Length: 117
Image 1 (spheres, helix red, strand yellow):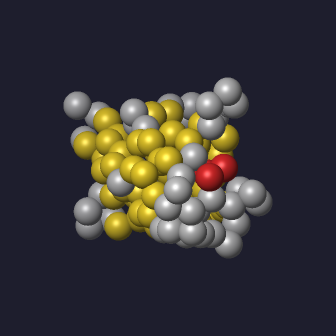
Image 2 (cartoon, one colour; image 1 turned 90 degrees about the vertical axis):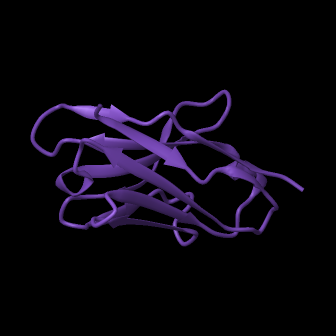
């Protein structure tokens, strides 16, 4: 079954760090543009970071300097490292796959990150 499965979320203290993972099943992540989105309660889902099949990266201005997107092709896994976490980073984080040639997209189920003391 073609799917993306995120993990790594949880409760984190302000100032802490976290690494989110997204494993691809029956789909080769390195062939696509891979994105991390987040959805804060009451707001629309927003792009956080992206990495293309050629490893070009892009980051949301709001989080630039605190996040790193990467991909381990041997493990078929996408990562998002977040540091200096703030309460306003509390959100559900989603992994997303986009074809670079068609309109095909695939979403994971998301992983919840809660930043609180």
